[in-house]
Amino acid sequence: MSSSVLDCTRCGACCFNPPENVQEGYAEYVELAPGDALWRRPELLRRHGVEKDGRVHLRLLADQRCSALAGRLGGRVRCTIYHVRPSPCRRVQAGSELCARYRGGLGLEVADGRGAATSGARRAGQTGGDLGKFRAR
Image (cartoon, rainbow, N blue to C red; front, top):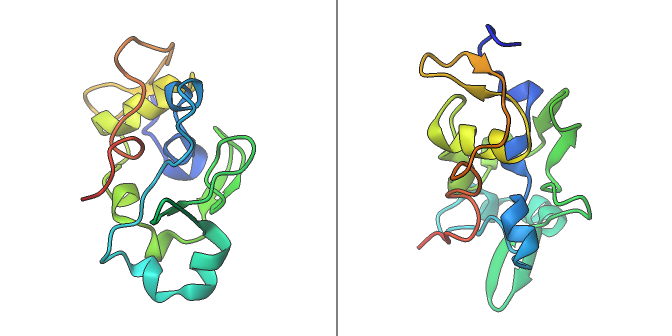
């Protein structure tokens, strides 16, 4: 895959709670902002949201993936709430710095400066990011 362009439908890394969050016991990953479209879909909010301490976050499954992610990490994936996904999810773009952090943190290939995938050994400083720990204000 070293010469291919990154494809979100063959990844899913940004939909997992980063390893350092898990190690620190940080389980509330993506907080919904007041204007997020998911608020207008109560059936989806009940299925994929969880409230803790007055804040609503996307629900994480036992393997630390978002409950809205269908498929297998690094395989074929899709977001089942893509059109109403929260604003933190919308910040991650294929090949961006955030994308590289999430991919590298889970041992997947990361993008070079041109958006092409390159071998993805985990690199220091490339894990975590703006989805978790950094709450929407």
